[in-house]
Each structure stands twice: as structure tokens, then as C-alpha cells.
Length: 198
Image 1 (cartoon, rainbow, N blue to C red):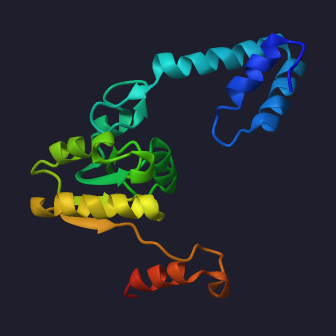
Image 2 (image 1 turned 180 degrees about the vertical axis):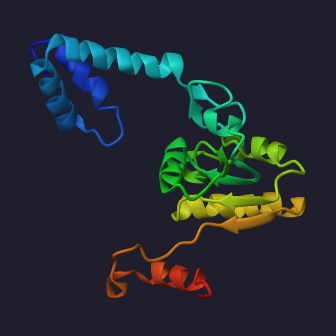
């Protein structure tokens, strides 16, 4: 649908490029923004511009940051003997919310996906190997439990095994609050594999 306003059409077009935002959702957002005070929309524009001007990737762990190295890499209270490998920066945010992990991170920038043309050279795997000096004793693989995440974890195991560093994988299984009878077979088998001694 073409609008009488070229500005509305361009806004709908650009917003519909965002993940999870189709044309109808983009249209709703545009019309919502048109109803907001001009100052609110101006602030949103400034915030979005700040993303590209101020946010960058940490030169050590490749997490997003406004200072380089990032606050996690420069925090002297963190355990420098372990690195948790994740796919994306939002995985770091999720793990940090648990307040359980106090080591360092390494953000790959995605997962292996041959169908999408994403191979090892497209991810920060060489940079991970470079970081594994004598101080690192454990690498925790925290990739997603989907096909791409599993393939990435398997590739990393083959890549890192010769380095004689302890490799661990985060546990997978039934989420808290779920009923066993509704869990699928793969989730149940992973829960059994990841069982712990009490």
C-alpha cells in the first residue's frame, strides 16, 4: 500500500527491515510515532544514532561496549581462568542476570550455518584460540541448543581439544516449572545426560 506521504512510506519500509517486524507491525509503529510528541520522536532518533556512534565491540571478548576493553574484561574481581563462549552479546546479558558466572566471556558473533554461508572464518574463533593462554584452565561452551549452536559447539570441541584445556558445555534439559509429560524426547534425553549427583 502506498501512502500519500513519502516520509511515512520510507519509515514503514525501514522499520519492516527489523527482525520480527513485518510491514503491518512497521505501519503500526509509524502511526504510533506520529501520535507522539515531536520531542519523544527526536529523543528516539538521537538514541538510535548513539548506537552507531558510541557502541562498539570489545577488542578482547567482542561483547558490545562503549569503552574498550569492556567493563567485564577490565573487572579485576572476575575469574580469569575461565572463558564462557557465547554466540551473541545478548547471551552475555542473559548470563550476567543470573549472577552465577564470574569469569570472562568470548562472543563469537553468531553460529555456524553453512546454509546461510556462515563458516568458521565468519566468527571470532581464531580470536578465541589466541586468547587461550596458560592462564585459562576452562572453556565453557554456551551456544544455543539448536542445530547451529550444536554444530558450533562440536566444531569448537575439535578446534580446542588439542590445547589441553578443560572443555565444558552448559547443561540442557527441562526448564524450571515445566511438566515432564509435556517435554519432547530430545529435551528429556538431554536432561538425563546432564543429570548431577546429589
